[in-house]
Image 1 (spheres, rainbow, N blue to C red):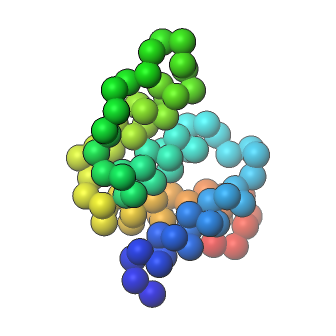
Image 2 (image 1 turned 135 degrees about the vertical axis):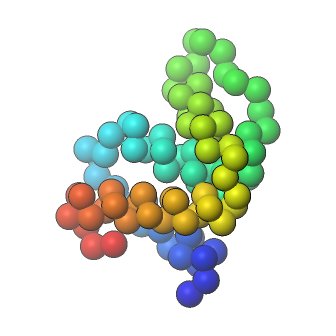
Length: 90
């Protein structure tokens, strides 16, 4: 399978992560997903009253320098790790 297919497969598997997955880890995979699918941040940072959106924006901004392929590979690796930690077959 190619990188794109693997990425799409792990994007689906990420939806089965348990509720106990930390916000920090969820933000990491969110940022990598956005970088892989959209590219560099293309919006302004949300205001202080939008903490959730701001955290997501910051997570995306943190991986802004990665190429699409790098972001996909890192996303797959991170989701695989989280699934294994949760005892779910990756």
